[in-house]
Amino acid sequence: NGGGSFSISFNCTATIHGPQGTPFQDGIFHLAIRFPTDFPFKPPRIRFTTRVYHPNISSQGDICLDILQDKWSPALTIRTVLLSICSLLTDPNPEHGLENEILQIYRTNKKKYEENAREWTKKYATEDQEKVSQLDDTFPTDESK
Image (tube, rainbow, N blue to C red; front, side):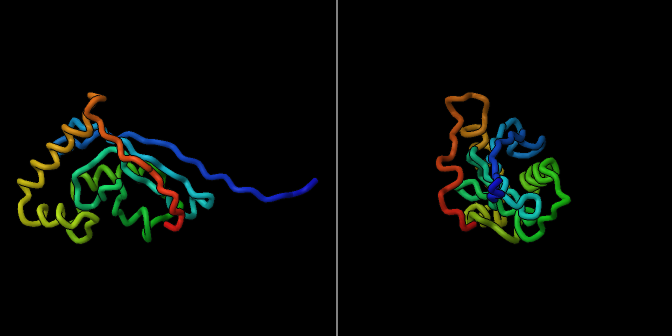
């Protein structure tokens, strides 16, 4: 009876619909979720696999959201996290951006930001599978994050 130790981590996907009244409405956005072996004590790693024009979402799909980093709590559910991501789509955080150029446009010309976000949503997040552009390498082999 060799009591060896093991750990299990798993991945799943989620889909969110762009919030109504935003440039993302009518968009369908796919996310990859990786649960660490010490979940729920550590946050899941969540990335968009659909391209999104947003100051708090990197070109690789990484999301700048405090509850996915230092504000994580084991009491949070995945549903709550996904609702927070929808809220971030509705109200970008102008203080912290992952895409500086998009952040500048958001801060200085909100109309242009909304036009660009609407255009990307039509181009990358519609149900027309020919237009859906998935980001490659959802979780790079760099496990240090």
